[in-house]
Length: 485
Ligand SMILES: Cc1cc2nc3c(=O)[nH]c(=O)nc-3n(C[C@H](O)[C@H](O)[C@H](O)COP(=O)(O)OP(=O)(O)OC[C@H]3O[C@@H](n4cnc5c(N)ncnc54)[C@H](O)[C@@H]3O)c2cc1C
Image (cartoon, rainbow, N blue to C red; front, side):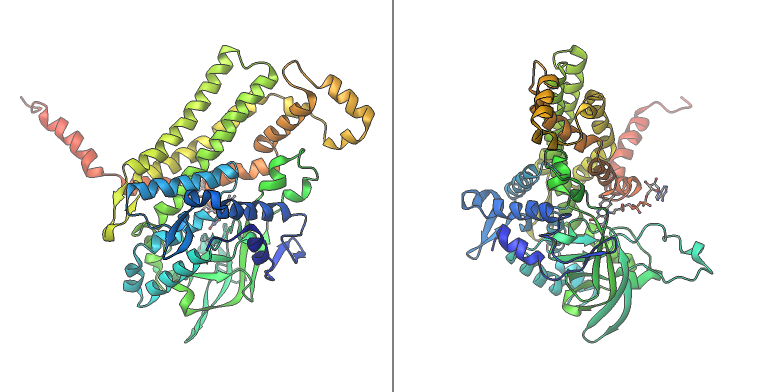
């Protein structure tokens, strides 16, 4: 069943423990640091549940409507349909919600396309996964994930002799009913609005750290679970017009802290297997299904960036300058590049066992790399086009409450091409994308959401057809006359 926005908000009031510094947040849907973000997520569910958009967002399964992010695709058309649903979700939030509900859903769906692998690694764990997949898709769950060990403690050697616990999330006890985990994992984006958090490892770990390989799902309100949020930008955005993105689109990132959290066996998908804790995502479609959402989301964000750049140049009165047109043309070309990469992934889709298909893996990883390499430069282009214009805008729209100040602002801040109030809104939007704390966090997000550049490029290295490339060189060399001729 497709959940509605109000059901979604209700689920967020389940007693989960969320901290902003020392403050414990009782209800994320009501708290001034989170309530608009909560509504943004709820609005995505309302959008999907709209009967007029039924075919865009869902498929039918035994009489049930299921969100397309959960579709295990069997044809190129399936992939295209799934892509269109994800693009519409990303467009609805301008590509600014990275871990929207279709992100981790892709990972679970990909694992569910080869559950026998998990069963081979540990009898019954693949069945657990399939049961969870069924429950998640039927209840349209919003999942987040914390699949990265905390930064700064990865080189364990340097802690020799230092008195501290090992804070990395790991199994500390187990019995017939399940495991108990303690420790922390980063950085569960969106978790404070989600239903359950998936734990596992998207970075490789070795067999010496078996206890950390635990791969499972935990309800957000499970006893012992808490989310330690980073600074919420929404709480500083008093007026929507002043910080239009911070106000509505802060999905938040939180460290997951577990203090002796009990996970029943039926929620466990892998245990005591360091070597496979990352491989399961590569040997199944999980990694590629999950990451395609990121490619599509970036495409949506590019639409915002390019449109904003053009409107800003109009407002600045430079839109017809040839050098500016060249820059705008270049930005438009970059938007078309990511659109083409997404389309190409589907055109060149790959067949998997059991009749499943995935987007082309090399093209998904190439797009990840492309986005990671170009985002900073793209935002910097917007910054260059902006000049100091955003900083000419007064601190807050609250000056409109004073008729004299409002009158002066409207007379002096307007230009021939745009009235003052429209310029105010436009430049505040620009600032929230290039200069605010929200913007700074996005710079980090786009650099790291799929791992650091070494991890991202490793995906392309791993999937590259090196034999074919070598064959090209060897063929050419072989056709040359012998060196001693
Ligand atoms: C906004 C945001 C949201 C996130 N959301 C999530 C989420 O939802 N779920 C989740 O699990 N994780 C999330 N993450 C965490 C993300 O997975 C990590 O940031 C990422 O894996 C990189 O790890 P790190 O930050 O510890 O950086 P590191 O891996 O420590 O890399 C930092 C830098 O160190 C250098 N470096 C590191 N290793 C090497 C090496 N071997 N050789 C040379 N140089 C090296 C590089 O310069 C690299 O850029 C998020 C991160 C951000 C910023």
